[in-house]
Image (tube, rainbow, N blue to C red; front, top):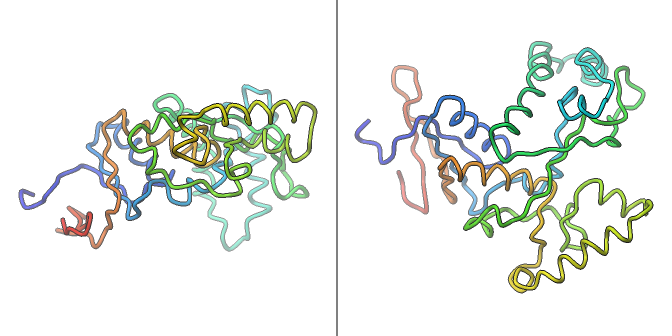
Length: 260
């Protein structure tokens, strides 16, 4: 082991929501020394460009909102909508049982925060076990200030998640603007003036200081990793694993064009 340049208990490859969640879980659960590597010069990958919505039936936000749902209904829905040759029942059972626990664990131990989408229906409305809302969770918007020195290292949001290429809006706000529901204009003006009056930020960057959708999810995970001193090495690519006695004991990586 003395031949390694760096020693960690866990190395996570990729800085999307899955990778950052895995890194935080390893560190929180047993105090593992964790390293995250990202081959891009930016953090977040496709998670940062996505809508960031996760589908977790019977989550605690839905329960608190009084939603009528159950694991059995969610399983009935998945059974009807997943092709039989792709339906892995043990995996589905584990997902439905542990998904709500995962959300609660992350919210209790990190900066991660979600809100239940009451009017975000399941996609297959004619399937048994379907629900009209509350199974989907959206990341709570967050200020880019939480990223500190990584503020410009976050992968840009997808154009479909930024209103007019400038304003960070969440799903409910986007829905209000699209449908022009009551109060939409007042809401838009509030977001509009908050952006244009934020002169110090606007002079340096086009996109809003307020992050939403997938960018908010990644930003919250990054800030959580920072608080736990989990390093994220950008421009670092995994080349190959090093095995010994049928165990992975290390890895060969390239960081900033240097082999480690």
